[in-house]
Length: 126
Image (tube, rainbow, N blue to C red; front, side, top):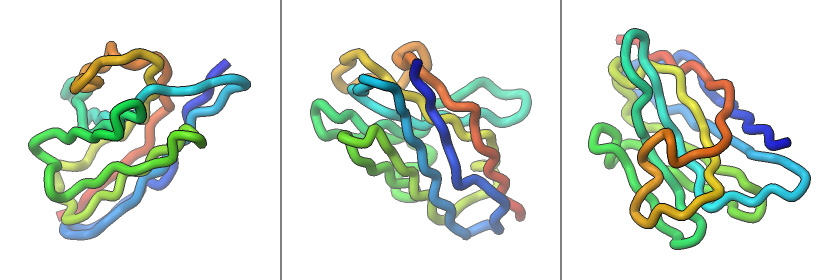
């Protein structure tokens, strides 16, 4: 059984920073990529960022490029999301997800992931 656990959410003012952490664990679990998605009230879940271990590449949604940075440790199935210059529109529940498949230049769709965390709330006040 695989567990995905996020942490690091909270309340921050516009322009502030937060760092989210996520670890996927299981007895013999190994991921190919780990990503972050977010969902605001009344909106669909949207892609934020992904770190692909097999190609050592990352991708970002246009809305967060230049402000968010994803990093992590493949061996530990751990990924971080450093969020800077936060805006009120970044307010959402942030979900971490782990994949066991290969989607070169992909992993930007929810159905590319096998395991999900429960989510952590990020609120940016204006």
